[in-house]
Length: 230
Image (tube, rainbow, N blue to C red):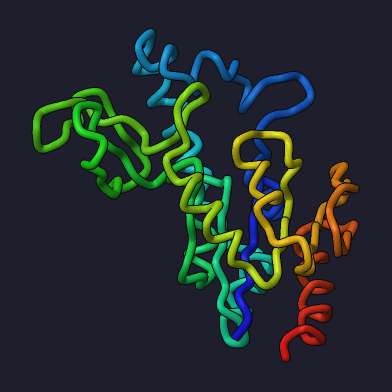
């Protein structure tokens, strides 16, 4: 079976009711990003950061996978599918996708501030001051904050370089280093971009733009892939 690599951004979860990264006003859920999503914010006010992510976690837990998430999961019947996502929700997994790489972490998990290898699944929606790892260190959200390294990026680059088909869904391709993944896709393979506003990627060969939302676009994508399966 052919290898499909799908790179997803906030646009695929928007139709599940999860707000996109940030609005035109530069705010994220009415918070300044500098106050809740940076190492400096964590050192300044841990309680505020935890409360922000508690709200986000509750939102994600209450959301349900949409038809785009489910459509990608169904592709596994006919293709080898790897989903690389910028999203911190678990909607791909809940839809049935079995091979998901999270570039920016996972909202449903916490990790030790003393030992980054200690990662835990959060029981429920809240992570609080006083919740500690087995070594006694405060737990933080298992999220890649602005200003931090993206530990999964090299693995993601290798996966993309071996793709037979590459698909981008709901990403503006503006947030680096994740946005640079598309340049690791082999030049000759088909590349699909699904978004209501196709980002400027005119330098790419064999590009098939699908100007639509994720749900509508995945339906169109599946029709295209039927022709490429053999």
